[in-house]
Length: 393
Ligand SMILES: NC(=O)c1ccc[n+]([C@@H]2O[C@H](COP(=O)([O-])OP(=O)(O)OC[C@H]3O[C@@H](n4cnc5c(N)ncnc54)[C@H](OP(=O)(O)O)[C@@H]3O)[C@@H](O)[C@H]2O)c1
Picture 1: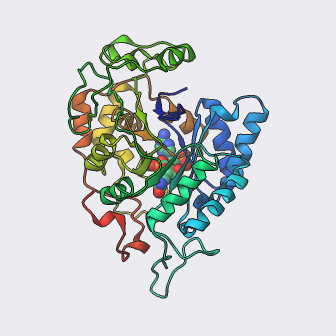
Picture 2: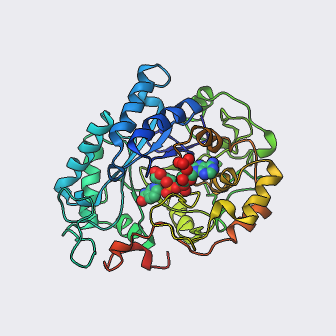
Picture 3: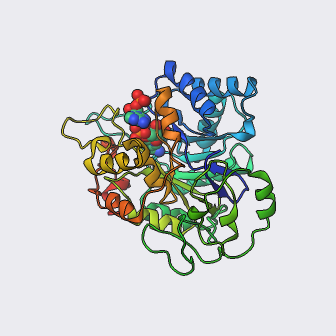
C-alpha cells in the first residue's frame, strides 16, 4: 500500500490513485486491473468519463480473483453538472453506483461548481456554444451530498474545481452538517518542529504532538520498512507509523469528510489554494499531474511538462522518469495525486515514487516553474458568473 491520507472516518485514502478520464472503455478495464495488480488501491473516476461500467467490471474481477477485498479499495467518483439540483443528487450517485456495481463510494465529489440543465446531454449547449445552466444552487447541491452520507451511499464527500471563495461558501454554509476538521495533522517528511502557522507549501499544524487514540491500532495494521532519515520529527506520534513501501515519506494527514480535487502540476502549482485548503483541514488532490498531454483540447503551442528541461534534469539525477518526478513533487507537498494511464508499464512506473526524495532546492526549483497555465479550463462555462477560474485562486 502506498502512503495514505487518513480521513476522520478512519478511512485511509491512498495518496496515489489511478486516473480514468479519457481512458477508452475498451482499455480502462485492463488499466484498472493492471493498477490493482501493481498495488494501486485508489481509483479516480466520474460519471462524465463514460467508462464507469468497465471500471466496475475490473474492480469486480479483481475482487472475485481474491486479489483485493472491496474494503481495501478507495473508489472515488463525481457528481456531474446535470445532477446539481438537490433532488437529482441521489439519482446521479445511484447511476454511478449501478455502473460500478458497488453499493457505496469511498469519496464522492461535486465535479464542477456550475450546474447544467438536467437531461440526457452531458453538456447542454445554447446556440452560442455556451453551457446551459440549471437553477441549482451549490449550497443546496451540497445538502444533497450530505444526504448521500446519511444514506450510507458514500463514505466521504468533497468538491472539485472550486476556487477559494467557493470553498469558503461551503465552509460558511448555515447548518453545514459535515464540517472539515481544524485539527489537521500533516508532515512533509522533514525534520522540523511543526507548531505554529505553516509556511507556504510546507504545511504543518499545531496539535500534531498529541497522541492519537488510533495510533496503536494503526501500528499493528501497518508493516514495513521506514527509512529513518526520512522520518519527520519524532515528537509527532504519527511520524513513527511505518508504511508498507520502504523509503516512503511519511504522510499522515487527519482531515474530516472533506476533500478538494483541482488541476495541479509545476505549471499550475496552486500554492495559495493548496495552502488555504490544507489550513482548513481539507485534503487536496492534484488532477492532470502530468499536464494531461492526451487531452483533446491540446494545442501545438501548449507547454509539455514531461519535456521540461528542469524536470528532466532532476529525473536523470535520481534515475527516474519525468513522470515520476512530477508525481513525487505532489506527494512531498502532502497532495494526493491521480495520474491517468492505460499503459501497463507506465501504470507500474507511476507507482514507483516512494523510493526517492526530492531536496528542498529541487522542490523550490519545481515550484518556480509555475506559470498559471491550465490544461483544463472548461471554456464553455467561461461566461458563467460562477466560473471558478476567473478568480486569482
Ligand atoms: N476533477 C476533475 O475535474 C478532473 C479533471 C481532469 C482530470 N481528473 C482526473 O485526474 C486524472 C489525471 O489527469 P489527466 O488524465 O488529465 O492527465 P495526466 O494524468 O496528467 O496525463 C495522462 C497522460 O499522460 C500519459 N502518461 C501517464 N503516465 C505516463 C508516464 N509514466 N510517462 C509518460 N506519459 C505518461 C498518459 O498516457 P497513456 O494513458 O497512453 O499511458 C496520458 O496521455 C484523470 O484521468 C481524472 O481521473 C479530474
